[in-house]
Image: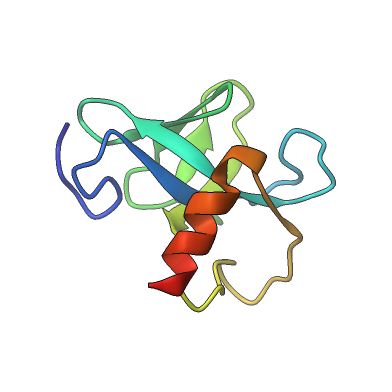
Length: 109
């Protein structure tokens, strides 16, 4: 596992994932906080059944592209101040059930 700003050398980490083109999994939310895993290079992010590929130089709205749908995603680490949304856009954020405990722990420190 390559250590970079996104992976921090970890194989699995809790991240903020925002679909810049719509909702994620039809949950009524444009963003989620959940567990992701990384490719060996650290340039590909796997979230649920999605393979999200790093956009070289960044995209129009996001920094990752869904391999299947072509939708752009913004992926970043969880911010302690709880202001994860990219740019000045208000989105509903859903925290995955299996990530709640870790999310709350991160906000405390």
